[in-house]
Image 1 (cartoon, rainbow, N blue to C red):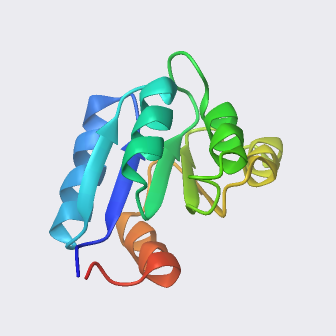
Image 2 (tube, rainbow, N blue to C red):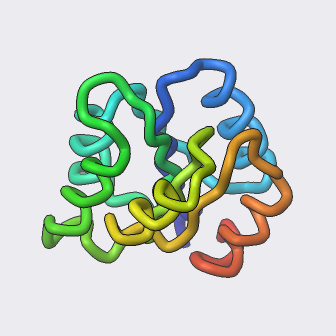
Image 3 (tube, helix red, strand yellow):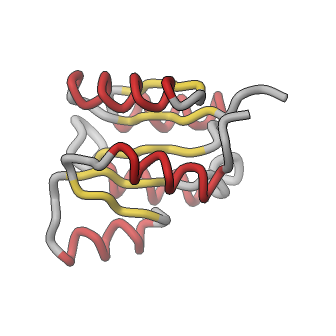
Length: 125
């Protein structure tokens, strides 16, 4: 059985590197997108098991990416975790209303991210 795949949609390189390193270390495959547009295309083409989505992206923001992914037949069932520096209640509400199943405020607790990942999609293999 192939390893489970997580798509990271994040424009900040240091954040991408931290998430990617820890997710790979936990045994998952990782796909990377640096913009909302790239994230949409990668999600449609690769159909990852989970998406970790930043909100403040160049071009299409994360809330709009989430809404679009939830409307597309090929991506509507992919669970989405939002990771954002935006920590106000209205941001959390907007993220959940857009279709995310989990909203985490940066800096992320990597262990919490991995625990929630296992809860939602299971172990890597």
